[in-house]
Every structure is written in structure tokens, then in C-alpha cells.
Image (tube, one colour):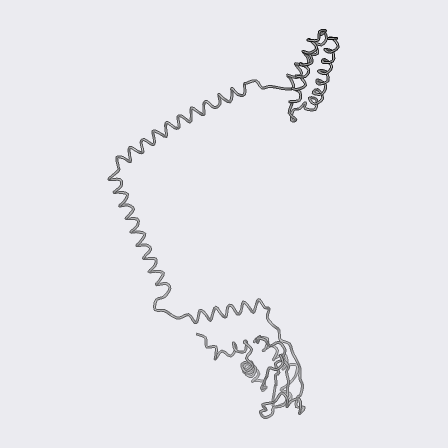
Length: 294
């Protein structure tokens, strides 16, 4: 189990100022620089001290400190103000002292690079998962042993169930063997009869279809033309009122048949014209019947 109390890097990453100072002092020890820090007003105030001024070169020291802090990525710390001075005795209120007594050699504020929010979330999830795995209590029986035992039990149950089914099948066959045989034979016979009946029906269907196809179908257009031709021929010799009335009925019948021609007929437009024309001829024949009766 990881001991977070002794994990300085993790504590520094969480934003612990004491842990950050410890890491900085370890990495800057070879250069003879010692650091102190305090977090105030959202800014990490960092004090760098050394015995000689040349050890506090601003450009190199600022770059080195920024690299260290960026590698730590401390939480909630973005702005860092780096102060430098020649080493003094311990001062508890050094932040106010350095400005009041003009002890600073130089001061520079830097901004730390913050990781992307998704990168930070992924890192936190990995860290949490690792911690959970480590903190899991160790039991007497491992997972593999439990899985092995469960698998053995399942195999035993499956074998027992299969034996029971085989035994039941043997008992049923011993008791009902002859009846089952007769039942199967009866089903086969019934199936054959049904198949023959279906074949007979199938053979009869084409005949019925052929009969329906060969049956004459009524054609309104042709019938109307035929009746109109008959009426036209009879109209040339008609003289009596009864003859004209018969002609009027024929023309009316021809007009009605033309009106029955469906719209999808290839001569539908002609049928519409003939319907009106035959109706007109019927009215003329009725008028001739009236005149001849006077």
C-alpha cells in the first residue's frame, strides 16, 4: 500500500507548500540555493537564498524553478513570484521583511503551465483506481481458486442433469415404446394423405384458372360501337314513332355503355366524346318519334 504521508511528490502535486519547498531544495541543492515559500492571495511567494550573489543568477534560476514546478503541476497554483536575496537568519515574517528592508536582489513572477482538464481527470482516475486496487484487502481465498471451484460445481451439475435426462428417456421408451411407434406411423400416414390432397388441389387450381381466363369478358367500348352501328343502320329506314323510340333506346344504351369505359382504357378520351354524341342521337330520335306521331 502506498503511504501518502511519505509520498512527497504526490503531496506537492496536491498543492502542499511544504512538499513543494522540499522538492525544490532537493533539486537546487547542488547550486547552493535554498528556498522558502508561502501561499498568499492566490500567488505562491517563493524566496530563493544563497551565500553569494552569482549563485542567484536570475535567468538560469527562474528557468530551473519553472521547469521543476511545471513537472510537479501543483493543484490550484498558477502564479509564482520568485524573490531572491543573500541568505539571512531565519525570519518568520520574511515576506514583509524583504520589502520593508529592501533586501531583494531581484523579483520575477512566472505563470505555471496547467494540464488540460481532461488530462487531469484521466490522471486522477488512474490514481484513484491504483489506490483502490492497492487498498483491496487480501482474503484467504484468491479469485482464481473461487473460479475453479465454481467451474467444478457447474460441470458436476451438468453431468448429473444429462444422466437424469438419459434415464428418463429410457424409462419413457420402455413404457411407451409400442405406442410411440404406432403414433409415428399414424402421423406419417396422415401426412401422406394430406400431401396427396394438397397435390389434387394444386392440380385443380390451374384448370379453374384456365376456365376463368377463357371466359368471355364484357367490353363496354366494343358493345357500345356495335349497338351504335345497328342504330345508325336502322335510322335510315325508320318512319314510325315506335321505330324512332326503339332507336332512341338503342342510342341511349350505347351512350350508357360508353360511359362505363374505365379511365385506363386506351380509347377513354374517345369514349367520353362518343358518350355525349350517342346521348345527342338518342334525343334526336325521341324528337323524330314525337314529330311522326303528330
